Image 1: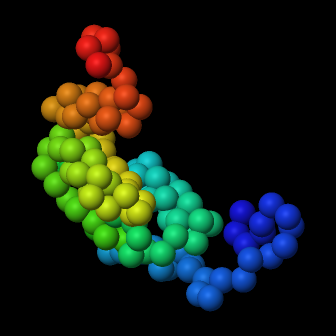
Image 2 (image 1 turned 90 degrees about the horizontal axis):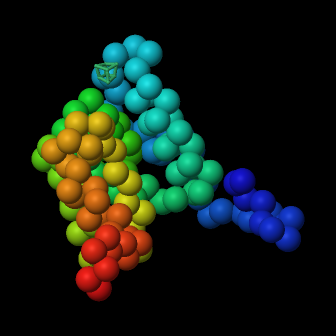
Length: 133
Ligand code: SF4
């Protein structure tokens, strides 16, 4: 939780980021859409971690949830359908110090993007289903 270190001393930040620091444009999802809650949760995590907004990148593909980079006050990349994960992997491989987020929906991730999703897991965890490594 914010500011409290494991030894129970309080960390004093030079600058404290608020939820407003992670706000982007006005979210235009349908009222009651679950994406509003996901956006708020992401902003709360960033605030709780006191992550500098310029040290995070939100990457998306196509679909309602993929409008997330427009609404999150970080760097963002609104990419192609099903291709959010390759872009995110590329960013992380070149700039490992950045916190890379991916917003993707069912069609984007589990339909056209299925192969990229599997390969992203393989790159991350070294999964080799054929044992060919
Ligand atoms: S996913 Fe899209 S269509 Fe469905 S409620 Fe959210 S904004 Fe509306």
